Length: 327
Image 1 (cartoon, rainbow, N blue to C red):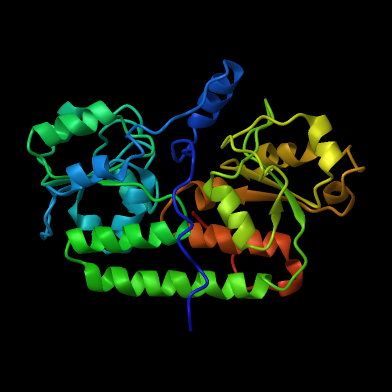
Image 2: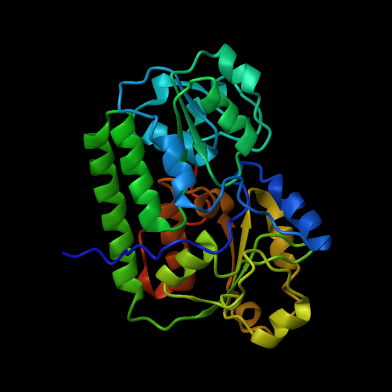
């Protein structure tokens, strides 16, 4: 059976840095207020990444440093957790990663700490890691692999790439086959269904949503929805309440790491606006932001959670937005 997932090519803009506690959301708001935008730390030109990655040869690396939560999740999914020598302070999944030595934040990397951990491989991301710090590591002779996935097919290829470099290719292939099969099943199930208009909120003050060049937009489309801000070429545009009222979304999605009363308050904001079809129908859903922000294996969980929210008629056995237990 042919896969439905095809490479859509590079996005025009980068998405914001992926952290567990999402301090970048405040950064997004500040930059938008001043008319700025987040830009990738590395050049978009593929040859810049190829130049760095060409120095990395496949080997059974024993001391690997991860510079992003998504990278950490991929390493653990490939059963490389025991070889992980250091992670960022935002790497909190799986729980075993929390105990690993910390090399700084996703954006603010401590080269000195990395050197003290004596790595034989560092895996970085072009989407947020500081270019100067990464290039300094390269200059010091440390093998550095820089990844840059921009959609779900490229996430699968990134997993295979890390598998090849770390000589866990067989396990990477098994993992990708499983993830791709899950994704294809949900895409096929959603394809013939009505496509509801969706507003996805990633920040409430100011109100910020997602445009076309984001993983979120890509996943909404795959899950059979229409992102009401999809025509936006800005990755994370500000929206006014009046704009939302005008486009009348049928589903409102709110990504958050919060639980309980704090999370419910984000839903309460919308409940007085029953002119919005999503509010009138009670279709306001909280989604775990890690499922949609981290470009690793759990992105397929995000796709399933989106399909569950957009198409409850599927009676999909996929996990609800907040499964029981630690996620």
